Image (cartoon, rainbow, N blue to C red; front, side, top):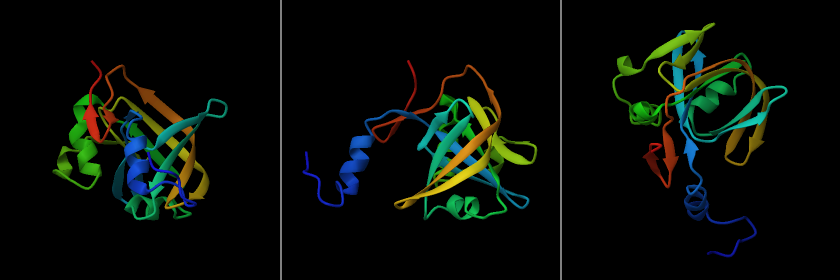
Length: 162
C-alpha cells in the first residue's frame, strides 16, 4: 500500500482500489439538436429519495461533458444496462459497433436505451466541478424498470449475477 502524498494517492492506485467496488453500468444520454449522444458511465449514484435525485460524474475530456455543460441542455437520460447489453457499454465507451444496433427510443424528446434494466429522465439540477470531472445532479422526472439482470463491472471486467 502506498503512503498518501499531499495530492492524494496516484491515479493508477486509486483506479485499482475503486475497481474493487462492483457497480452497474449505465449509459448517459442527451440530445444535440436532432443527434442522439451517449456515454458509458459507472460513476452513477442515487442521492436522495425526497426529492428523487441522482448524480453522474463526467470526465472533462468527454464529448458528453461539453454537451451537458451547455446551458440550453436542461435534461439528460440514464439507462442501466442489462446483462445482455455488454456490446452497448463498449459502443458508448469509444469502441463503437454499428449505430443501427443501438435500440434507441425517446421519452418526450430525450433519447434512452431500449432493453435496459431501467431508464431515468432527469432535469439538470446542479453542476458541481470536481477535479478532472464534473458532477451533474439530476432531478428524476420519469423512471421505468424491468426485473432483468443488470450488467455488472468489477476489477475492470464485465460480470453477470449468478
